[in-house]
Length: 194
Image (cartoon, rainbow, N blue to C red; front, side, top):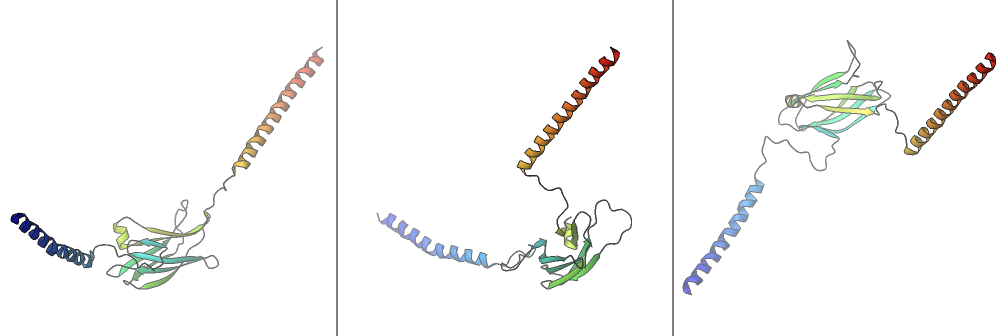
């Protein structure tokens, strides 16, 4: 009986000492700094319209009157970075043409406002392609665009039924007229012969 009491007391002592040590180790692990290679995350209250790796686009607007994009950017990397912005063209464009492009160097953590011209193309949108040295290495890019691409509007189901019905009526009328004329020509042909 005495042996089991000693074993129970030893177990209680080990649990009493190891419990706080385990909690302290967990707290120390949580306070350890993050991996420096990880992509920095934006602050929780920060506005983000889009992101390309460490490049944060807080907001962007397009002014139709001046054909100009205005963008607020922040570079979250550890060292300054080159950012290239190129106006996007239409797919059927070929040969030499005039486009806007801009290359700038962003300092870490500094919010920068950039203005760049871009024409609204016949497709109905104005767009800019943004790349960084980091994104080129990863085969990534960011496209900012404004406008609505031209497309055919959706046809409501009720209108589709109406169009199908109208097509059927017009086709039936055309067949009736065609058959009626053939029959009339046959009848008149017989009268002439007789």
